[in-house]
Length: 383
Image (cartoon, rainbow, N blue to C red; front, side, top):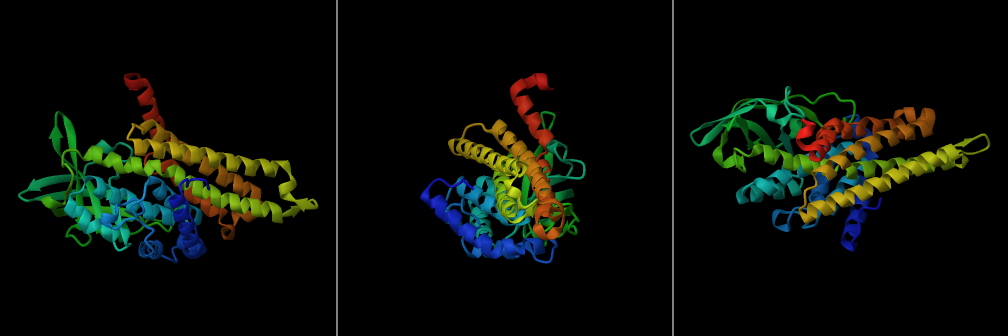
């Protein structure tokens, strides 16, 4: 894995790698079977001071940069993708929203608790009738005195069953013929706020996902995040963050697959010699490494764009596409290399296949990312 460049980044990566090898990877199968909670790791990361490397020190973070966050996501994905998903949903989707759009009171109250692993967040945007088309959400927030009252339904919300803090997007009105949207911060236990039961999923099984029901949930005006009319722009910020980190997750998974494929190619003997002596096997492993290097170059370019403040919409969408396609392709190739052993649970290859498919779907499907790029290139001609 070649993400780190500076001595500080390399030292952080070494620390996280040792933590993951000791505390995360040995429990990945138990997490997948839902015999162990991802929150045990979440709390341990917080206690170790590793959970929020990019938050300013004033808010309990490590005071580091985006590269260090990418390292965290890659190393967690190498050890257990479901854990990486839940950590990212809490620290990045929820926490970064508070960091960028929240008030100073919001930041001081919530970010240190997130960084310590004492607060789990979720971001409620997707609805039964609104996925890729964010502006079609129907959850509504109505102003009543010093409060807003929210009514609606969310679905496919990562961390919702266990969240302490919910960041919910809702329609607040209409302006110039278009919906306006706000972002609302709701604490666990608020009357009318009901997370659903964890969904049974194809992959990322250890990362809890559910619906959220909002029935006349009263939110103080002080708990509005940012501008109650500019929620669409605010929703795009954490989604862009999530998409930007997709290559990091894919890099981590490919590291996991490479380690296992290289070892197996040296141990498995067929026709009197290790299968690594066969060119077909060599090509699979070489292609896997080449794809990992492509993703690393893409990730570095995305990080450079974030740090320089330039428009990276095309770049982020391209990285998200590559992350999904290359992770899925190489996990299938790893199963082919392992043969029958790849098909059984104990090797962890089938888990990788199930987990990485989400990179094709979550945070905007591959098709949506292609549309983003097409509209950037073609403008009005793209429709």
